[in-house]
Amino acid sequence: MSAGVVLVIEDDPHLQQVLADQLRQQDWTVSTSATGQGGLDSFAKVSPDIVLLDIGLGDMNGLQVCQALRQQSTVPIILVTAADTPQMKITALELGADDYLTKPFYLGELLARMRAVLRRTQKGQKVSPNAVIEIGPLRIDLNKREVFREDVYINLTKTEFDILQALVKNIDEAISYKNLLKQVWGEGYDDIRSLHVHLSHLRKKIEPDVSGPRYLVTIPGMGYRLRSQLISS
Image 1 (tube, rainbow, N blue to C red):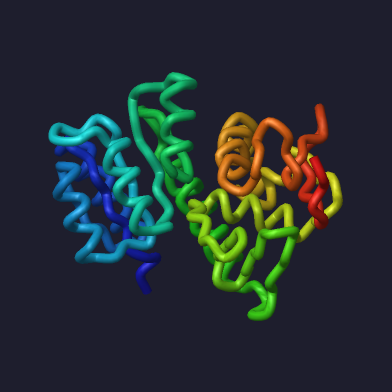
Image 2 (cartoon, rainbow, N blue to C red):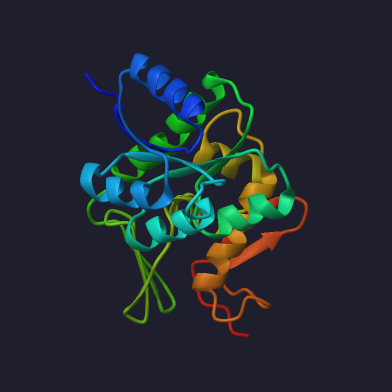
């Protein structure tokens, strides 16, 4: 039984082949591309469950490919790059990547991150069919994984919705950074910076004024809380 379909967009032929061989040994169905445009074309053809995307492609920047994929789908995207800088990681996450892996890496780490991302997707599919939450002008449909503000659709990435869903399940309660990381990424994930970046991006999308958050509030030194009622400014 296949573990799923993974699209590998990597311009290094040796690394591409190694990844494809190793993933097939783990029962993944693998589609590969060496270019950004080829990756976009392959994405439309194979409808992958997850995308492994190199940033340093020849024809397009991997960040451009990530942005293009995110405009048409919420499929999980893991960016792979040799550039290990905080700004690059922040940019990748803000453009919609679900995770970020720095070369060189162990196959075990890659597989663990893939499982964690897909586990979040599966959790989102088990929500009660009538789970619709209304907070002021916000309407959050947990089953359809949709968010509206005054009937205007808000396009969230998969990770942004997973964070929001975790906060909804603990509505009006302070949830620690550690607990939120565990609920969204799984046991053992401790990258608080990624959490802050994703939540900052989520806040920009749902808050009327990010300088004075009404819904997603920070508990200094502890975590976050999602308020169930609109707080007047």
